[in-house]
Image (cartoon, rainbow, N blue to C red):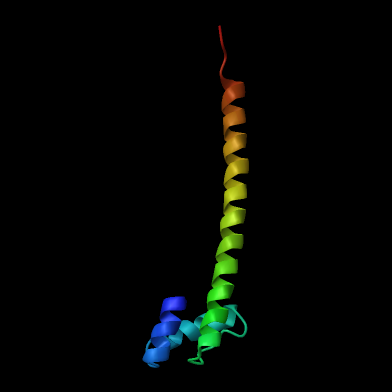
Length: 78
């Protein structure tokens, strides 16, 4: 969103539809070509990406641990 917003500030015809779509997800980050709105949208994107990445990492760790535990219990040693 940062790069599209910065380019939109220089050339307002670029990325308008993308920014309108993102403003429906992130309130306050609209298509106004101002630095404040670009930084607000970038902040929303960073927080959203951090939370999504953290949740993905936790779920991956839980399922990976469960898979190794089930694999260890099915192996028989003689």
